[in-house]
Image 1 (cartoon, rainbow, N blue to C red):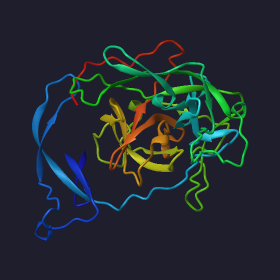
Image 2 (image 1 turned 180 degrees about the vertical axis):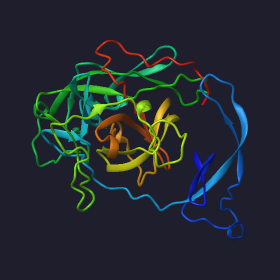
Image 3 (image 1 turned 180 degrees about the horizontal axis):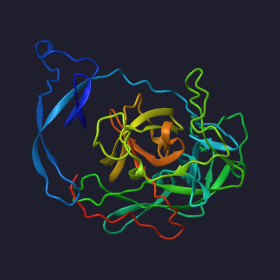
Image 4 (image 1 turned 90 degrees about the vertical axis):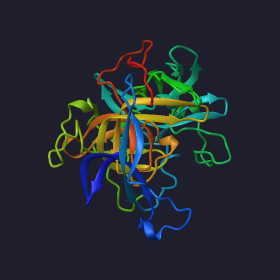
Length: 355
């Protein structure tokens, strides 16, 4: 969903968006081609409230086919390691979870940030839902190592775990998840976040260049000794040259870099979006996510954990970690502004609700 666009300008009316390669008048539609009605019946609700029935407008958008960049930085070994490179944690003797790293200051010390599910190695049964959980003190490696027919590492180079180790897990937020056939109510996650204590002098605050685009060799954050600072996105005002009353940080220019698809730019469209993520055997639901659009191509699963960083007027503020994407948006979970430490953590409590 997004605000309906009429005559090239956003209105204040929410619409369900349908992306097509080419718009056609109704008279030109062939049998079997999709006819999008002007409105559809929807049910909307905030978590913990009763759903309301509405007639919601639709908006048909003509888009170009997405172009995916092949390669990214999957096999890169770099010291100091920059944001946008891949990290991994062993899940078995021969396999690793793969995610994206970024380094930022957090309560006076540098940490490697990534997705909570990227460093989670166990699922724990419990109430109100089962949890994916990371184990503190486990080693994290850069680059991520895999032994399959298409290894992420250059097979001509000899690697050792001692050389690849870049830090140890300090902590992470457990991720609530439900069976795919669960019909609600749901408890929502706020954070998808794990963090690592880096080895001394092994990391850089820089975020890597867009090596997939000719001539695009500039770093998003160019000074290695300058730190990215974690910020509360609710305290960033909307960009003043856009329409009013869109909420915090609306229109803010942002960027992120993922290990699989490289460099992305966009603008903040919402800071309170709901999100449902379908995994192979379960679903995870999120609230208060940061929605960024438009996106020029689809991120891939290894991009999870890429940090959303403000550019332009607020350059260097770290805002969230990449969770998932839709046809025209990317979604990021927030980051607490202070390191909660090494104790047992829980997601913030909110009343359960439907999705």
